[in-house]
Image (cartoon, rainbow, N blue to C red; front, top):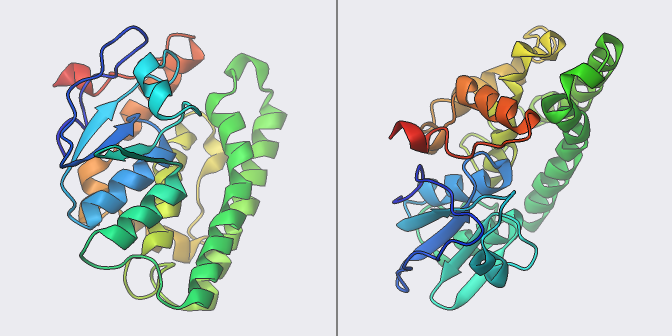
Length: 250
């Protein structure tokens, strides 16, 4: 996993050398979508290199590889694939180890529908996380916090219906990794939105799922601390996004 915590390349930089025999991930260290791909690679023990790129000052050579200008993107030889759900499906099909997507097509469909329903919680999450605090009234903060929590309740209901510790069943599967990255960020939110706490009385199963996920080796290997998320948020709100908070400590 060479390069995970290295500095982010910017506009005007030269693309670093790429090993054509090895999978390369174009990544941004604080992007939850890119985190999906990294988690799957770590879980499946796939050797890979990481090239971190600035999303506010995108390198020209990165835009040549992904015209959408988004992460994640993966490259193997001259093959380039982007979009998080597409990259993880490709990795799960091509590389050995435990298959993370369900073999049953119906269960796979159920998991993907759950992921889509979960994404309804993201608009209020982003409004709270990256909205200028001076422009958000206490009433708006409470309203958006409640909206996010209400939309997250679909996950509590899913765990109750499935009667399993993970969304994927008795063991962690693709659906769990596709949802997890935002919970690292949600856990940081009470620092600036105290209403965003997951009450164990309401979210008992989801809180237990979080505790299990925090013990997963892939999650632990790539985890960003609450302090680093808050520092990244502060720099972004100030208009000078610092992508290299972790790299600068190396």
